[in-house]
Length: 204
Image 1 (tube, rainbow, N blue to C red):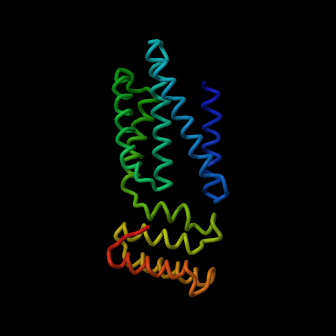
Image 2: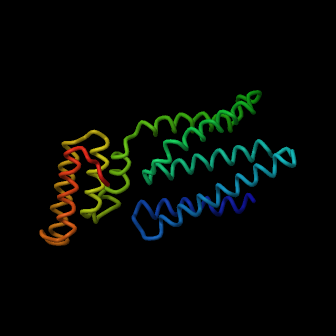
Image 3: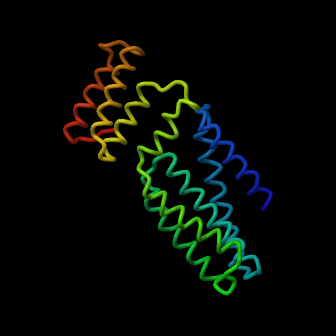
């Protein structure tokens, strides 16, 4: 089981680096590696509880780590489910700390405290900041197209940054004119979306 977990954790890390450099296939690799890790750790914890063996705390720790990994995945993908998943992560982490309360110097307790703190801080980071880091970074993404600027504009609008959002939306239109032509359906659609967002209809 441990070897299998290490393999899929390695695949998850690989998928993250593929995502950073926008190499095709990163989405599927990240999702399925995280899914399999979650299933394996849940099954491992349940089996350990049923057997009432001495590995229960270790299995719970593994499950906590994987759920935090899932939360990280939802944040970098800007999935709304992340705002609910964090409560599950914090709950299990607190339970983990409670179960090892007599071992306060245990490294696992320290890790859980750090993850809870990290999760709370991540909740304060706006989606536009994460999107900018993952997609607007010219060091890792040389081809920032109209679609990326359009999505960035959307996240800026919902993050209550209207001035910056309009600039990003106009940049998306400029890029689309170069990529598709001024009268193309794509350009026309981007113009319509920007107008709607300016009027308070924050369509994606």
